Length: 96
Image (cartoon, rainbow, N blue to C red; front, side):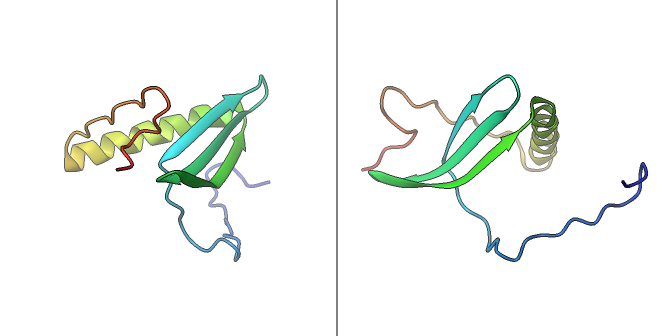
């Protein structure tokens, strides 16, 4: 087990080709874990591009890291306007 403040080596699996774009996320949870499914929706079809399952404690750390990075981004590039939430059966954008 690593000692406190000792650098850890993290290996990236060779089969992870690159980043995936997600424009939809679904979240569900049990008492023990949170499940996040990311999807890429285009037109009338889409595909799941990633699934993450984590503990409530780790999710809280993820949220904190995202909040800190969002603040740093906005401090550097300016305020981000929040996208409108989907209504009805829409998925968040107009597929015209």
